[in-house]
Amino acid sequence: MDTEQVTALVIGDVALIVVASWLLGALARRLGQPTVIGQIAAGIALGPTLLGRLPGDPTGILFPPEVLPFLTVLSQVAVVIFMFLAGYEINYRQLRGGGRSVLAVAVLALLVPAALGTGAVTFLDGLFTAVEPDAGGGTFVMFMAVACSVTALPVLVAIVRERGMAGTPTGTIATTAAGIMDVVAWLVLAAAFAGTAAHSSGPSWLMALVLIVLFAAVMFLLVRPLLDRLLRRTESSLLSPVPLALGLALGSAWVTSELGLHPVFGGFLAGLIMPRRNEVPDAEILRPMEQTAGLLLPLFFVTTGLKFDIGTLDTDGLVLLALVLAIAVAGKLVPAYAACRFTGLGPHQSARVAALVNTRGLTELIVLNVALEAGVIGPGLFTVLVLMALVTTFMTGPLLTLIGRNERPEKENGRVDESAGRIQAQ
Image (cartoon, rainbow, N blue to C red; front, side):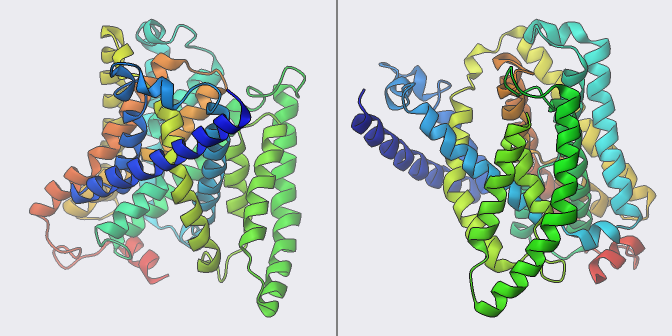
């Protein structure tokens, strides 16, 4: 296949992916699910799970090996932008003024599933090795802790907005706690993966970790103040800050990749250090970056779907899926609900917060792809964990609807949690 043929096929694939994701995303919205569920479904449908099983292998024809590197590069750019947005949208003011409910939910809903995941790998290692022969080791254990405990902040925010919970104590507690959990989870994952994705000539694990810490310090202590000054000057000259933000995200991603980490960590770090206006994300940066990521992210779902084949699951895989689902769901719902009740929230508020922080979605898929590319997990466990991410995200909408049927207003029995009230007031 010559260059012109590859170029034409890549353009055709992008058109197919964008349209299919748009259609299934709209269908998901009509069914009361977040758009990302439909987009993920489109990615899986175009892969070997569905389209690849039709006569003639349409998946192989549409996505031959020659075009996959180009689609992968585009999808990685989208993911870097998405991770920049995930870091940029974290509200430092809310993190600092957290309150009892936020901190309790963040700590328990992160540590409990992480501990359960670690315990399962340690004491039930036979279930994991049946699906993942290379299971074990410190990196794998830390990865499983993160995989079981991560919360998809961007998807959670979208659900909060779609459900009209933005600005309510419930929505604020859930999003702020998810922000804290996201930061901690990515830091743990960065420490676990330091050096694993490096080339054979790359830095050692310890050297990679030291270089990453130094790079983060430079970003926070030097780059952030310089950007703040530069953006203040560009405001007066009416220059758009979007190219600067995009260059920062991609440049930071390149640096972390050279240091032996996946580019997504650089994108997330760039979002964290990007200056805000009065500690609030600048809509002039946020909107075009969101639109760009939204257009390109379906490519990521397809490259994920091409690695995912539900038909490969055997009995061992189904047993492991049941175990992982039990850990992931119970490890989030129970401690999050208990934390809210202990800090004074009513039962319905507590249940809604618990349902929200159980959302995994896109963030989980990014974690899984990073682990797969780093060689920490194989295709079998990847398929199991992708299914876990889909189920936990899909169940959020129905859970919120079920809770809402008998729910009273946010102010229950004339009381509102003081910590939630303080957050909302800020």
